[in-house]
Image (cartoon, one colour):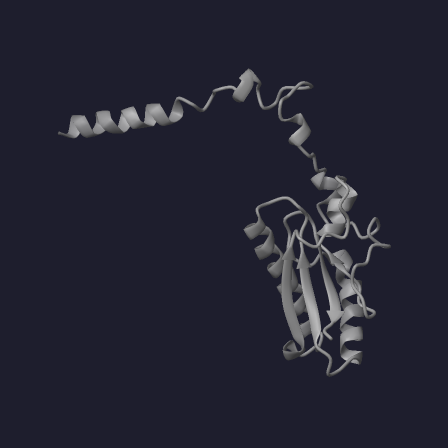
Length: 175
């Protein structure tokens, strides 16, 4: 009885592992150079270049309105980068000077990831900004969060600089 269980377990393991070293469909290895069937569908991102918010390249990019400044995030990140702290201080100042008005905090993502994942990531980014504003004296009751995921791009070019512009939180006065 025990030998049969061991044999059955071993047989299942062999079957599961049998496909691990197989070439990609069409006989091409996923890592092959020019001529790769997947080459046109692949986008390369230099995460070292845009791993942080890289505010120097985003200095002129602002999708926020009403005196607020957009906050930019690294690829797959939702913590506010250190180089965005000055923007957060400015946003808190603007928010505190517009007392009584609701502030809409809009989380956005680049196009990588599923719709569900990007929606959740957009909410996490919006929550990080809301929490930071709360810590700087803006009442949480004045803030409303929304996530657009990847559906509200500031830029639609297939470039790393464009993707970086879409990883952001915009702030607006709710009207």
